[in-house]
Image 1 (cartoon, rainbow, N blue to C red):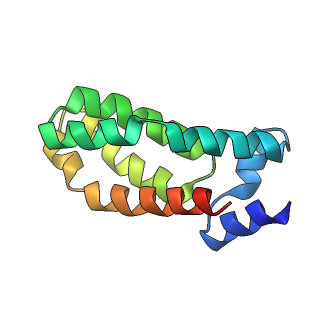
Image 2: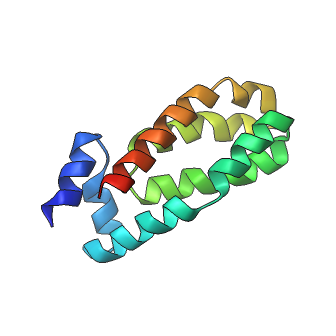
Length: 116
C-alpha cells in the first residue's frame, strides 16, 4: 500500500503523522480521507467569507484546520491557521486576505485524495 505514502510525499504532506494518528491503520486513513471529501466545512467557510460572517467562518475554519491537521494535509493545515486566527478575533475581512491560499491548498488536498 505504498500508493498513499507516495501521494503524501509528492505533496509534502505528513504521512508519518497521519498514519501514527490512526495507529498504523491505512484503511482507516483512507476512510477518513474519503470522509474529508464529503465534509461541507470548506463550502461553509467560503460562504462565510463571502458574507463577512466571522462567527460562521470561524466554526468552519476551525473544523477544517483540525481535520486537515489530523489527516496530515500540511499545506491546507498551514493555510487554515492563517484564516482561523483572524476569524477567531472577529475579523472576516482580514481572514479573506488568505482566501486564495486556502483555495489553492484545498484544491491540492482534494486532488491528492481523489488520485488514490
